[in-house]
Length: 155
Image 1 (cartoon, rainbow, N blue to C red):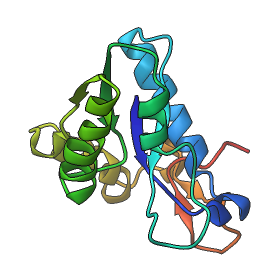
Image 2: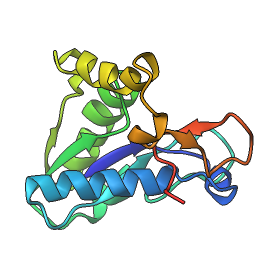
Image 3: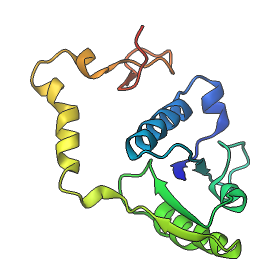
Image 4: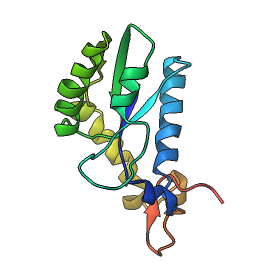
């Protein structure tokens, strides 16, 4: 199961492609791992009185028909309350209630390769490459000049 940070639905209705990026990423990772079936759940802020992305990770835990679940929190750069508390404590407790063995993939923030990934993202801008080489172009989600995106679809 992949866990992504939730977002208000009105952003998606206004054209944000966040959910598409999440799905594309999960498709690639599951394909690389040879995992044909997976679930995507969102960690939402229930204390805000607006609709958020669905399904929520808590709902998925109750519905998974398996003996164990491995949760990969894909939209986090470092361990924080959303991983250390919401997943490791609260979601683990919910999994235990439905007798589901629970494992969480750690955030690779301290992996020595992380700075290299960020350097690769910055390289075209300091080396006079064409930004389009890395698909950096005007964002298609927001019709506002200067709003750039690494995942803008090709025209």
